[in-house]
Amino acid sequence: MKNLFNTLIVILLIFSSPALLAIPESGSHMMIAAPSKYAVEVGQKVAAKGGNVVDVAVAVGLTLAVTSPYYASLGGGGFAMIKVGKDVEVLDFREMAPIGTHPKYYLDKPKDASINGGHAVGVPGVPAGLWAMHKKYGKLKWSELYREPLLLAQKGFRVSGEWVQKTNSNETRFNDFGRKHFFNKKGKPYRPGETLRQPGLADALKQMRHRNILSFYSGPIAQDMVEAVKQSGGVLSLKDLKNYKVRWLKPLKADFQGYEVYLMPPPSSGGIVIQSALELVKRVDVTKQKPLSVNELHLLGEILSRSFRGRSLLGDPDFHQNPLEFLVSDAYLNKMAKSIDLDKTESIKPLADGEWKESDETTHFSVLDAKGHAVSLTVTLNGSYGSGLVSPRFGIALNNEMDDFTTRPDEPNMYGLVQGKGNVVEPGKRPLSSMSPSFVVKNNQVKLAIGAPGGPRIISGVFQAIYRVLVSGFNLDWAIQAPRVHHQFLPHKLFVDTYRFAPETIDGLKKKGHEVEESWNSRVYGVLLNDSGILDAAFDSRGEGAAGGY
Image (cartoon, rainbow, N blue to C red; front, side, top):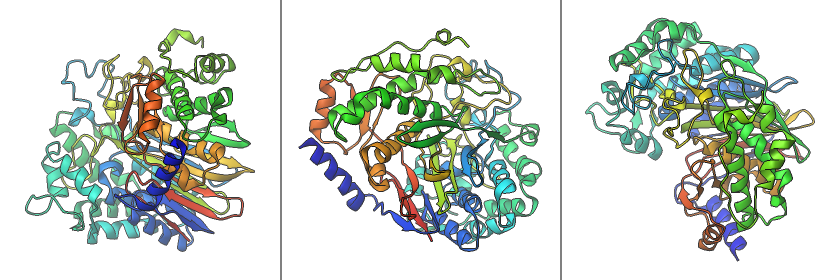
């Protein structure tokens, strides 16, 4: 009965979500899944002009900077997984700590200094990331990709319910320029369906269109951002912006169910946690359990708990030695598997740094074509509207990514994650992240491009969506809509989707000793290339989104 209830929940969520219908789409050439209908429409236009997956990704990213500044502003950073040629590549355009910071930077400052205001701002990487992708793999002219995003900034777009909620909830956090750029001329909040025009951002996009990204990292746009930060006491400088560099990295890879699963390396913690979880699936009897049963959900929670256990050992690889081989070694994984009990939850000790001998406001979109070329890209400001600072002239919302560092050892950050020593603040360093753009590959073709926003719940969301496709046999849409659990090791608590589980299921989990808390979850966006050559794109009914292509 419980399994029937949970299956019906999936069906109801797909076809009758009270917030929005998460209707999947299919196509034969290229498909996009993204959090904004405007972004999908712009991507479709670029694809129709002959753009490849990277051209589409750049245009979608620029559009989200216009329509969704609360999590996709040019003032943020991110990761992208890309496959255009033979190899899967990873692009790190994560924010960096300014030169003026140091390991004890926050100890003499208010506790919210890494969340609100100038001290919270890291060096943004979004424009550099989009430019690096296009320079290496783009097919259309850089200037052509700005056409539609620029029109949306100039002529405006109708704000959504989510836009209104996010913006209104940050009113007291905004500096004066946040209200100037994101409220109407009378200083009042917009209502859903009203049109927002952003002439300042349009001016910035014009400069970037004609001068590549030089105008963002030097010149008027750079000066505008630095001014906003300095007015709020922060240390971001023109030198920080001028010195920013992206990094091309080698992805992690896990063999699972006959597929190659490509995952993000550090400074993302997502890849190694998901890899650990996939390896533990092989060692625990979870695949023998009925999908969405109490036993299966319990085991998935225990697997996630053990996989998150090693996160505190991780940090920026340019500054810190990451014990990746140890965390996926047979010895360690077998030990973790043996600690999992089908009948009850078990709390285990944190992983001390000495045990090895050698560690949320975000958005995501996925693009996949019929040749198996793909981009999976996650971008973030960290919190909603980041630091609350908006640049005076151009209206660029600035991140609060510094909170992703270990600002105060042994204390949790805004997402409840306790950070390790490898993630302390250092000039030029990139903070640990949960962003997890991922690919599932077979025969050198990307079969699934997937990712999610949502802080540490990104990791559990992406893992479970992959698990549902490759193990449970769900189609992509069902895999994304299915109820999920989340466990991040600390606190020792099992988070479950609000309103998505039968009361009997929650009671069953409690009987196994879980402290269960109903909570929001990540929002997954994915595109799948099925065996018949058809592309299926799906987005999560847990939030706004769209899917489309041609």
